[in-house]
Image (cartoon, rainbow, N blue to C red; front, side):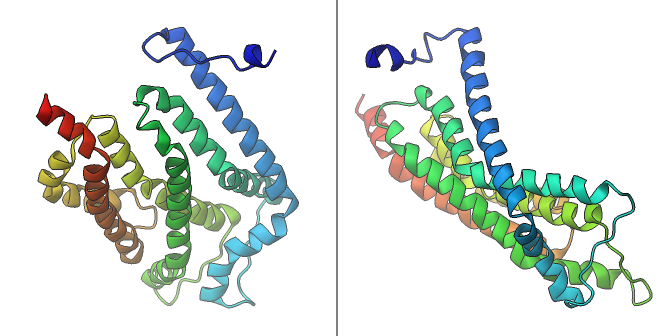
Length: 256
């Protein structure tokens, strides 16, 4: 009975397009379920979650002025659901990362599949680090943006303008900090080599700063440097890690 339940997964070469899509659907369903459970937990602790997001505004405007204003009777509840959904994604991120790894792992060699746990752990850690970086730098970014408007203009924030902004910024930083995981994965898959990344270093640095200037929602210098400088460091670290992890592959190619 146990052998029947423990159905062996076909190799990626033997899987048809329909089977690939079925596997993708399975991973998506598990991820969505995990996010839903996480969102329920975040909904139950909404007051604490909201206090966490409001903290940067309270630093800038003072505890007596860090207030958001709604313009409709459903706005408050709508944002409770949205913030809970974001919290659910945050809580379920390890599960989501593991599902991504399980989907792509069959394309790797047996010696490379042992990186499953490091992949999930590092991906989760980097996303948290990126989101935390955005959270830490956000008060300075907010001060810069408020000061750019001039002394006669005073902000009156709604949940859309403030919560939406800080959540997008944290997600953008978290996603960008997955950059080294993507580079190392591409090297493990043989799609790019450490030598090629090293040769493209100058262009990569230029593209990192250009992408940061275009994609950062706040467009302030604090967020720009808080994002791009770590990515440049991650780029160099990815080359070093790639050289270590693909050393055996290079030896095999040179010996053949």
